[in-house]
Amino acid sequence: MREAASISTQAERSALSDQKMFEVAIELVNERGTAKTTLKDIGEQAGYSRGLASYRFGSKDGLWMELFARFDDLWKEHISSHLSDKRGLAALTAAMEAQRDIFSRESGYLRAMYILWYESLGRESDIRASLARHHVIYRRDVQQWVEEGQAAGDIKADVDAAHFATGYCSMMFGTIYQWVVAPDAIDIDAFFARFAETTVRTITD
Image (tube, rainbow, N blue to C red; front, side, top):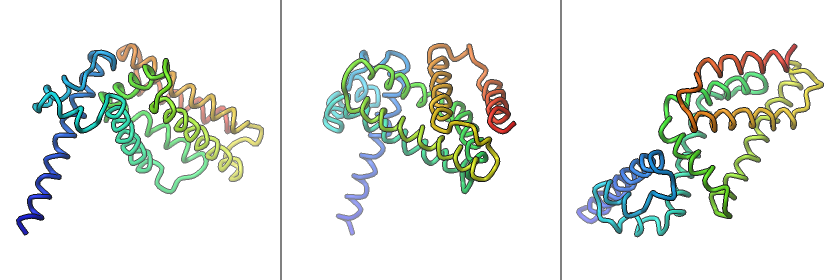
């Protein structure tokens, strides 16, 4: 029993230290960007030794990949709660609501992840490759919702689902880019309300 309790306690301590380091990493990336964020600073500012982050993640890229994986899990859970069993036009509308809501729920994490992603574009990396794969999935999902809506008669048959998906994702990621650069310049709620209204009207009239 003591050994099991010790293992559990050790696992809990590791999970707690990881969480603290993730939180510090997000803060530092938002303040400094990725280049000036070091594993040493992350470990120390989280209240641990300067070498713990290096020991735990191996490199900054290792930490970034872990942050990416956790954010991906968070996003999947978030959008799933909005989608539920929705399909077609209802799913597309719910996805827009999910995107709007995550700005307020996870603004710090969201901003840090997009800084990380944009800064990864200048070099070959696991982050860049993973991001490319995820963009394929995002476009595929939107295309599927449009095709389901067309099959149900809710979306016009002459809408090119693949091209719409590309334009939709471009609008979403372009908006996030502008928000990362100047958060106060965009009224997120007003933008998404108008975007949803215009999008639905365009593909259903």
